[in-house]
Length: 70
Image (cartoon, rainbow, N blue to C red; front, side):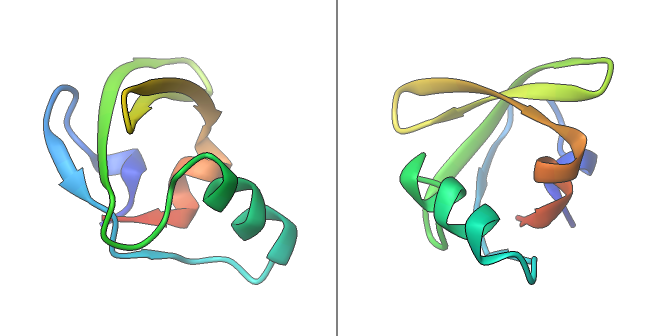
């Protein structure tokens, strides 16, 4: 499943970044979002969500969340 379907407050392990866009993959990698890392959806809002990765919080849109397979 992707991060869009994830339940708020539950920890997930990132399995893969599913995208053909290398810039998107590089951006997510720079945030610490890569295979094997733990990610948590802190809250949801219209058009995106707030996620926690390595003690940092980021606001990502649904397009990015859909590329993250957990």
